[in-house]
Image (cartoon, rainbow, N blue to C red; front, top):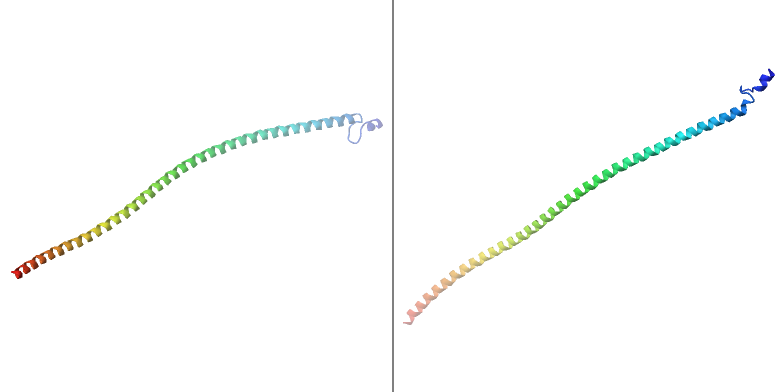
Length: 147
């Protein structure tokens, strides 16, 4: 038993297997770690590829939205320009209408002034005719008195 007990230690491994066992367990451990690292690298590489694809997809969506926004902005600017032109046209029309109103008021005032002058002229004509008639009557009276 001495032989048997000397060949095995408390772990149950033989003394001759120990260095080989440790070496093989280290090798297996390193192999497992290398495999895990490779899996992590592969998954990381896949993640980067996935992230890159997602970023490209997101960029494409954002570019599409940007293009749509630019088109909408162009439409809005066009509408704004049309409204501004209409407003300018309306402003021009209103200023023309305002000047026409002033002209109309000036003409109406002139017409009323002329009507007043016409009334005065008519009164002056009638006064003139009355004075002519009186003058004729006075001349006749003087002529009768002179005879």
